[in-house]
Length: 368
Image (cartoon, rainbow, N blue to C red; front, side, top):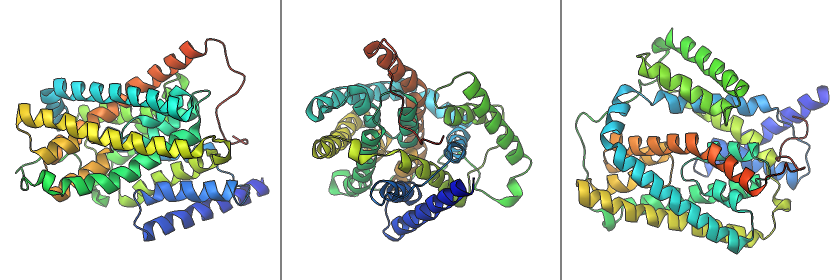
């Protein structure tokens, strides 16, 4: 027990150092990517015997699940209903393009198609990595590399595109733009915080019992969204808790990554870059349809469909003066669509390709 505690403490210290370094370097999602990098380097290159219990990862997923579900208010539902056909069409077209890109990249890199597909889903870093751990045979290292490279490309390329003359249409500030969550304040926490905490934990445990895909993420999303829709007022998490959620997930993921087990490293990196670049270009092409048919400003349309997450695209939309509510709803709808439909689809595809049970299990911590 004492040995495990020491190994766990060493893991946390390493992850904190990694997160701090990434903050100083102004890297995107520093408290997620920093711990991933630090624990991966420590466990693989330095051969340190880190340990991170699975409840740490699950705690992070609970907080992320709450954050996603808390955005699902009546205002969001109304806007989604008005734009639903186009949201569904654009999401399906994007995912079909991901299926095509994954097929091409799997042939080039000579890596299993479902692994590449799991790594190609837009704006679903934590969800897809957690799902990749659950599905037998998925190479989690490749999945993580694809998502990290996509994220870095999004952070570097999309702001340059949006603030370039390509989108020089002037800022479009909409008065009365929808605000979905209360700002976090101590006086607003009770009793709603207690209600959300209980429901989040219970839904996660229930999700695990009924074998829900990614139960510690999807369960809280469903429970929190249900509370919001019946009128229980949600609130945004304080920045510290958001960082903690990313830190918990990052610590655990870093120990699952085994770069030495990944063949064709150069091809994998090249395919990940190509994948991210073509996803961005395809999203821009799709966004022109919304511009032509609905008169949506070009920067708003592009940020609605860009293959990033709701948080990153929301920050860029705010800085550019785009229609924040529309960007949030499109990104939110795609995240929910991927979260609900991709896990069973990927598992179905795996069973189709491998009708007999495999003898090898998913990558995981040996002690868990």
